[in-house]
Amino acid sequence: MDFRYDVIVVGAGHAGCEAASAAARMGSKTLLITMDMNKIAQMSCNPAVGGIAKGQIVREIDALGGQMGIVTDRSAIQFRLLNQSKGPAMWSPRSQSDRKRFIEEWIKVLSGTENLHIWQDTAVSLIIKDNKVCGVKTLLGIEMEAQAVVLTNGTFLNGLMHCGKTQVKGGRISEPASYGLTEQLVELGFKSDRMKTGTPARVDARSIHFDRMIRQDGDDTWHQFSYLDTVRRELKQMPCWITYTNPETHAALRAGLKDSPLFNGQIQSIGPRYCPSIETKIVTFADKEAHQLFLEPEGVDSNEYYVNGFSSSLPWQVQLAGLKTVKGLEDIVLYRPGYAIEYDFFDPTQLHHTLETKQIKNLFFAGQINGTTGYEEAAGQGLVAGVNAHINVHGGVPFTMGRDESYIGVLIDDLVNKGVDEPYRMFTSRAEYRILLRQDNADERLTKRSYEMGLADKYRYDLWCKKQSACTDFIEFMQTFTVRKGSIDGWLESIGSTPLHEGCKISELILRPQVGIKELAEVVPELKAKIAEISDEIVESCEIQIKYAGYIKREQMEAAKLQRLDQIRIPDGFCYDEVQSLSTEARQKLSKIRPKSIGEAQRIPGVSPNDVSVLLVLMGR
Image (cartoon, rainbow, N blue to C red; front, side, top):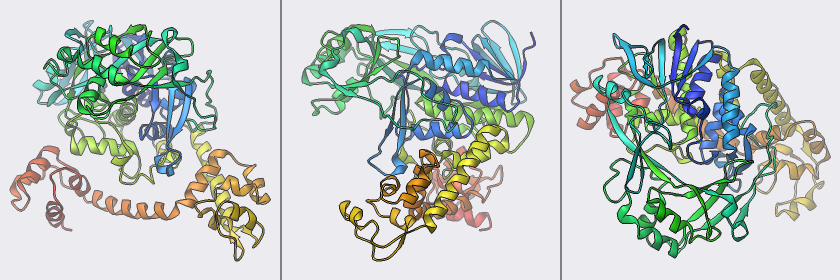
């Protein structure tokens, strides 16, 4: 067997699967190394994909030709489009997945990908020559050659799990940790630290009193993650269930705080602010009498349920006692308790925007190794790293995305320029141009570019072209068709809108807050006939483009200003220490991060507007 590859990807989580798939489909001979071929793309925490801002990332992955959206749709057991009461910039798709089916679908994808090979083993060190990665060494003693390596080790680097005072070495329950890579990289000058994450207990559905809880069904609409018309939800759709903790729950948990790894000094690393453990909630929000819990199904043929909102590393007896006080869980039976896990990560300011490390050429990091949390954030990074690993090997223009192009671009720019002091999670509030980064238009933003660099295939590109043509035609119809004066006055008055004083174009009517295209079509036969010829996706996209045209144009102008600063390059090796007119903090931050443009420098915390002005003068602007 010939262990020589273009690209080796270490770790088959969500980042690793996207990285390996992307590199292979672009033409690189690729190897994916995983400890367990039965745990590929394992949903280590909750069995769900998407959510606020995260759903937009998955849509972007799909628009680029990635696989997460396809796999999610095919394994979905509940789909919801969140925040529909708000503007379209806030709409976020989210799906519950059948955990087992999710893995099976990913295995089908990887197994059917040309140029992609899988090897079950553990990478223990990198082969590095002249500050360039040349391959990896494995636990079985095999040396594998590669021109580029992508590390996506998740929580496995020196992973340590906590349940009460019990500590178990491992990267995930019943799975061993990975040793050697952190130590080698630190010796090479990389800065490493520790982070912590956690997961709740899994419980047996047969012991849950669902009739005492609030049922939450999914949406019965056409929406999904993938833009492809060949992908559909196939599985039985299942509800989630809502219940709440109470003062009795909190009292039971407080009784065990003395044995909590989070409060007795056992865990020293940084945990997630926005997904705290239940014990952190009852301490931080001591005045709050209840916290919402979601009971999420793990699969169509499984009795396992995930107790979302009850992440914990308390002793299992304390977790059980607390759960039994919750309405509907009085007779609960555990499959396994929750636990916390500590693991190594690397300061992401040590990366370029391509996710290649600054210290070692052709070595890429993606996922939790960069201090992020979440399947979606990991997958987005994995795709970018896989694409750039291929480009480094075969040539081409490095692939990066701006903050006005994608949430993935925002994510990577934040990591590289700002670093992390806690597990990074994406929110819509992190994006300055979120009206441009909607979930409905990810294909408009990214598919053509992906096709031109060889990732998105022709079928996807042709589908996008047809959609764009249909949108152009439909918008032109609405901008030219006139609704006659008096023809719909009764309907307008019934919805609280003023009657027409003269003929009005459909596009002008749509600007009214009370008017929607489909509702208007019920009283304008010509519009109804036009809508019957096109898909719901096109109707929704066109309505958003018309209704929010002013906001979109304004953000495009603001983004153009940012692009101008990003185009002013800073020479490699520029010596900031010699520029005394820069603040001391700016000199230190700029020397550490070494931005490639004025735009990147401007986004570094500690670099003031005055420092940016100084840099502009020095760059001849």
